[in-house]
Length: 478
Image (tube, rainbow, N blue to C red):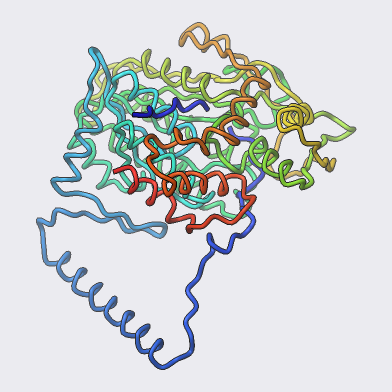
């Protein structure tokens, strides 16, 4: 029996990530213009409408349906029922002495996957929540979901704005903690879809806090803020006491709004809240829209990569922080979080309110990042120097982590070269190996795993549709 590998594996994002189109990812059925085909097509459409009508009618006329649905302008999810509740309870069951029960929002995301796996590994109860949005291709999130399911973590599909779903989750499980990582990420994408940032980062956060304030008991909440809140601040390194009232992007503004909202709910309702300002997180199973990820892909494909330059030939640098270090900071915040002091929506005493920088304290020029990747990949990059655009990107980030060191015991240990080496190894070997998804028993299973590599590198067409990939992996494992 082969064991599942450790997930060895802030945003400084260039915008919504788009893979080069594959004929399989964007597969469409082509209907031949024959009478038989047309009759079949319209018969299926009519049948679908009839089924939708009866389903809607039965839901409207039943007050005790085991299935609840959330309808919004974004996505529709179904949940509920005895089997669903059993999975929720099983996933959230605490198995270690003095363990905690944690609801992890954004569990299929980059940081969410790693944090969920770490919590589960040490015996805590973990339940995930994710809406699997398409900011980047959901197939990577589905692959992460498959990894977590192998370790016993169930991810509920739903939106944090679905108040009924959140209330149901707290009704089924009395969570002691919430690790809130669900958010709309990215800086430049905000110029294309600003509403998504308000929906997820502001309204979604409020929706979650509204449910938490009325929960019995109230959970302690740790949530992801961002280093982007420092905005146009020129004082370095960035300290938690520095001004954060000059956001350079809408993303940053929504994260700053989150910090103010957290203060409000702490003050009025006694919720224990800890905000973590992540600094450019990277590593295995990361986001494809991050520079280190798509730089690697484009270098391997011999494509030109943009190297941004600040005014007067200034250097653009980032405080790159390896995912394992970030996970340690998240767990440290959860373990030191004090209990909330409210009950039934009413505050009974002062509650803990904290914010911490989680960075590496060693800013690295982006040009040096590329040089490291060149050595690891043994491929010379085609660099194109460009001016830093005025679309939300800032010239540098640099974390002062003294507070996190003192309060959380946070001590990052991974330098950029070591972290990128692990990332490249994951990208070129770990996923394609038979260990990537546990037991690989035949060539068919290996072929599916190799397809993930093709998806990530985008070098060759995969032989199954991207949206089908993760479902196939999950099916092959059971």
